[in-house]
Image 1 (tube, rainbow, N blue to C red):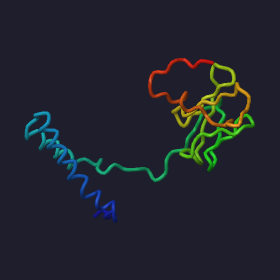
Image 2 (spheres, rainbow, N blue to C red; image 1 turned 135 degrees about the vertical axis):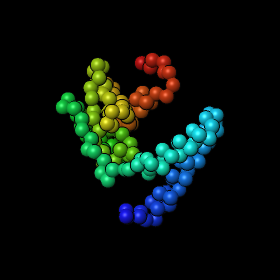
Image 3 (cartoon, one colour; image 1 turned 30 degrees about the horizontal axis):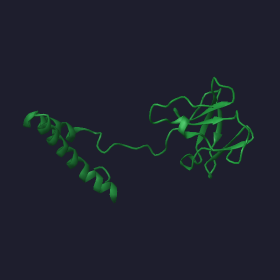
Length: 149
């Protein structure tokens, strides 16, 4: 006999299959699949080994390419690049990020795994606000007009 999960895991193990069975009935009704389709779906769920979904104990290590400049984000959310501090964000504390050159001189993209999270622009002189990464350029949410300089 398999060991029983404790606490919240036990509650999830008991409720998740019931919830999923209910979802099967709702989907069958919504798409007019009939009772037979709902029964087949519920039968499949009962036999499936995918509920609840397993979560790995440790996540795989993050690896970057040989041409990337890898920096570890400090507890303050900053990295050091080209002798200057750059704010990446506290969400990335302790995580490695890759700084990659672009086709523009002095402009670099900061990547976390496969996602571009920031742009570093070294073309201007250091100012009082030096080190704040331009996240608006890195992560536009709507179509953007070219920046005027």
